[in-house]
Image (cartoon, rainbow, N blue to C red; front, side, top):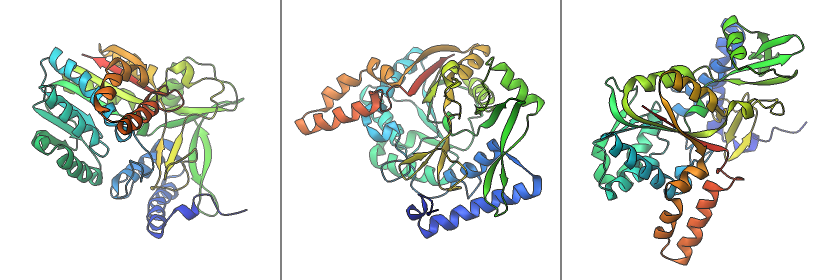
Length: 370
């Protein structure tokens, strides 16, 4: 056997850091036994001072591990700002809260666009748990939108006081830890993480708890044998917490995912877990510990059903392409394209945002209204 594909992509600093994160997880497995995948994902991504989102490597953008829509084109954020303007006006609201602001580019573009529309919020709150990303956001917003930096306030937890306004969650749900279940001829089991004789992470199984079995049954799906997939058990508490802090306004959720029937399609029998490392996508979360992104697609049916149980209204569910086109994408492109070269560049950006083979159909936009 040759060396793993990723070995030559890791520098010494990455190797050392990955081993530190892996050792922390190994110690917990050795002390407590098999580890649920949600806990593994939580530690790999968010362990304080160690996890993928808590250390100082560049993650987002062309020199990072993956690219998000705001990094592809300012047109994305401008469309979103146009929608926010309508929502802020409708509710006479003065606050935008962005959950996990990435590089800060989207916040800067939204503020600049709302300024042009004479609809600046009094405050633009950013909930950011990563100290490293927070510093990057401050720097970039200062560069791109310096006159509005005073309106931006960073939070480590959701606001204590409820407010009227707009909450934006762009690629937030996909990074939440998920639990993995498996269907065999013997029934359901939970897919968990253990160690082999060489202390490497390996997949193992254990019996499902009563509570996990109840959640699987609530899906109302008869799964075929040799099928495994994920459940995000954090969705309901997350939606509930946003409902509690929003007096009135809208929650805009943008992420890749499906409605339940498609999410748990019989042919999607190995789930939706995806990992990203230096612009390469693969499906093995047990390698590159702490230095790769780990994501799972969103079950938008779960989000919408629970939201409605809290009396939130599902105002919109559409593809990203449909949302952007309905919110002026082509007009914005035409206004910005003042030269043939700009027109070519922007047309390519629009293709990436809207084509079915790119982000256009896999990414969805769900808007909850209160």
